[in-house]
Length: 224
Image (cartoon, rainbow, N blue to C red; front, side):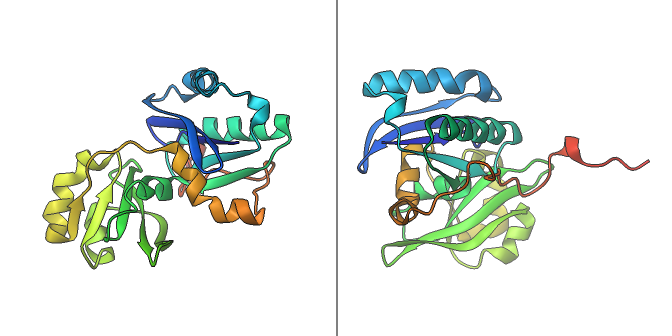
């Protein structure tokens, strides 16, 4: 049984997946309360699935980019469980997970996360010939800069999208297609990690780190 953990943004998610079937799944708005709410939701999820934590054979965790606090809580919880249960762990891109909710579209998909300071974190994905592909790596950019990065009609998605949808449409015009609001499903990490799971290509719980794309402001060195 796989346990999927997603604390990438103000929304969080958990899922239990067995042989490609989602046994139980939860998604909720937690703001910055990841550290308080994650484990109680996990306990509730296990009860709903009538499963024991000791039955988990691998941890899947959204590794970022995203909220500094959320990723820290999610990764530390996932790594702690992997160590205590002596099971493997696999980190999955949070932007890939956001985009994968819309994998059925024929368009390239650009997930958008808030990166603060009027910046956004994004990447570009598309399912081609039934294979999920990353067309552009995760990076920090701006809505203005997207005008040169997006060259064709593209589906934009993500919980931050409503805040910049009008700006996107104004800048990119017909190239910007706004996806319907859809919560991230943590259980889809099992599909994204399928090839790595089958190949036994795991991450090291000791060295797996969040993908922040930029350092937290509180750790930046001050110059006098």
